[in-house]
Structures are given as C-alpha cells and as structure tokens.
Length: 107
Image (cartoon, rainbow, N blue to C red; front, top):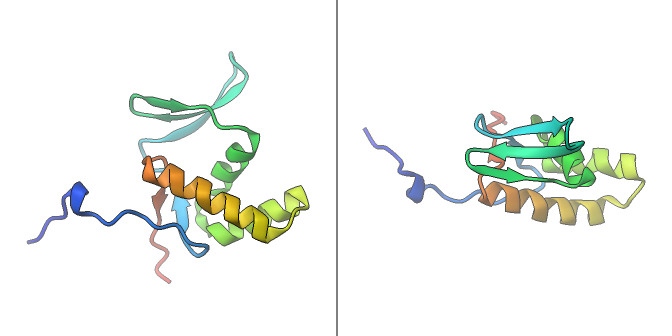
C-alpha cells in the first residue's frame, strides 16, 4: 500500500475546467453582529469582499471555474474573458492557501 504525504501532493493548478469547493474544514459564514462575510478555517479568518463572496458561493463543487465565470458575466454584465482571468487568479490563491479544493467530477 502506498500513502501520499501532504508534502508529496501536487499543488492544484486552477484552469477553466477545474471544479472547486470549500473543504470540510472551511466555512463561508455571514457574521450578523459585524454585518460582514467571513471565510473561516482552523486558526484563520479571511474577510472577502462582495465579489469574492459571490465567487465563493458559486464554487459549490458542481460548477467548473468557467461556469462560475459565465454566471458572473451575466450577473455583472461584464466580458467573460476579463472575469475569467481575475477569477482564476483569485481561486488559485485561495486553493494554494487551503481555502478551496479540487472536486473530482468523474468526467
């Protein structure tokens, strides 16, 4: 039996076809007292802006990054190529920090 140690895993490279979701240990929650969204992970907290919250809500493990960008392009009436470039950078950064993970789609 071969086991993969965390340090041996290949880092996630986010592409338009990548499907991502929050891992079990990460939660996106609205703090009513502070009236702001929080991205909570063990011993870490991020305060995403409104657009980042929308992206995170769409990264639900059922949509590819490209599909998330299509939805955002419709919501914000903006060119998808610009949105996709920005979203890939953001998702890559969050995945590198452990706030998002790849989801196997079986495709």
